[in-house]
Image (cartoon, rainbow, N blue to C red; front, side, top):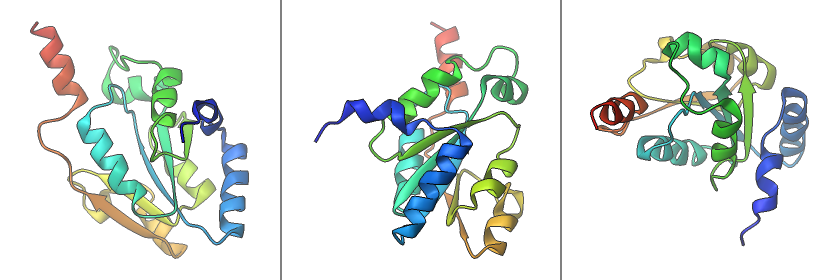
Length: 163
């Protein structure tokens, strides 16, 4: 059933997210967490989010704020502002909650919510994943999803520049 009215309610702040996580845990449910800038959503993002959602009952997505994305990606990014990026992610079926974070990494957020599963897409090793140690110390697990070759926001931007 389509319920578009719930989309804005899936975008939460930290306190709202912590309350939602408490409700999920009272029901014996697990949640996975993944993060990124998600500047221009593409097939690689969808594949990664779909895989992340398979790891637990619920999926929480942390989104870098505009300031954070700019510090990480450069002055010309993000292309889409944080409100737009959060809304697009919240509209996806597999995403249960979206939270924007200001820091360059999600470590503080991860420590605040302690997900059951931390999911990172890409060519990372366990020791390179921010928050992996903290999640595992609290009984959680870390999953590295393979990237989908040929899809990247930088590649899309480069292609647009050559039009």
